[in-house]
Length: 466
Image (tube, rainbow, N blue to C red; front, side):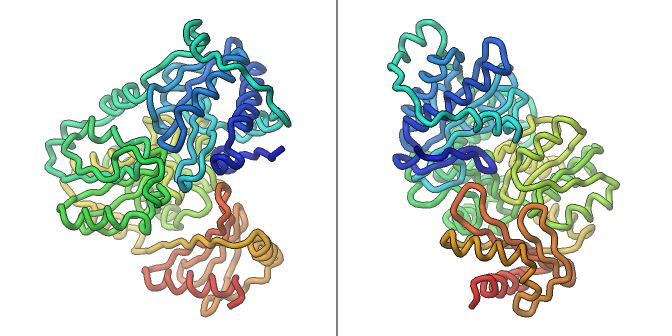
């Protein structure tokens, strides 16, 4: 029996190793038991992304749910995570389920649970499901067709629902007529059809079905987007949007083909909401985000809360308080007026609408931010280490053994979620194991790219004992 454990965003495993039909049955039985304990006549919306065997896995999950008395609204084709979250909210099903491993490499798949409020399941929900996962699962007869005939399983077009919601939320005509040349690298992910349908002049890249992702993990970070960067230069694209495998994360490029990270996008969103739209409310960001967010919030008199890493923590606050912007370093961002969910395409359209309304280039809008908070740069190294190495480094962090990383002296340390080491001049480095992959992440922030590179180089050398 393999242990099934949910990470920062769902259960993920290697297809054919731990991501099997039997383990899918175990998770689905547990989810069904939780649903029946909490809801009368429970129902779910269920979808899958572009990964290997997604449709077959989803049909299996639908069959298990129906066997256990849970009605299923099943996607007609691959869908993004925001489509599932929106559908769970709009249809008011008991929950949403999507089979996805998000930005993980192609050999992975996964299982995410969404609440009927349109966002990630609370930690308490995940605990309730995990506690119900059986050691083994029975072999369920394939009654998919029979359940469909009885309306226990029904197909539902979640992509159409999502696109209509997008059209109602944005001035698409303004964006279309602004003359801004838009590019979208879909990274072979589940959001690949959306931009073509709402903004058909968008220059598309990697927007076809390829479960291998051509060997590149569908995570919209700079090192994975070099082909897109070249396309932006060649085609004169003025804003480049990249989305991950399930289209809930964003990467962005300006008109000079420079990567715009999530730290900068968060600042752009805050500035748009407050300075251009006149909104007020709380900003919620995770522990690995830039300290410039606090500075911009202070400038505008906004409350700012920092959470552990994982969008589920932001979602819970968004449901209970007036949050205008929420987000995390890894590209999962949200704004008021939408569901409390990460949504790469939606956030990309917010930025495009900002550009269209102001007539300003992305570089000019970022300069507005710098004029308030100062320039800065960030970076991240993902270290593939043995479990022994990872645990040794984390133990050293806990014991306070790191007081110097090369030329950088530690002035203070925070440990909300991982270990953040603060240096002089607002520079910092953070160490944290990934919650979804066998990786140790090392983050840094400083005034410029060269300083960030120095921090990462000397920091990694220190923790590896070189």
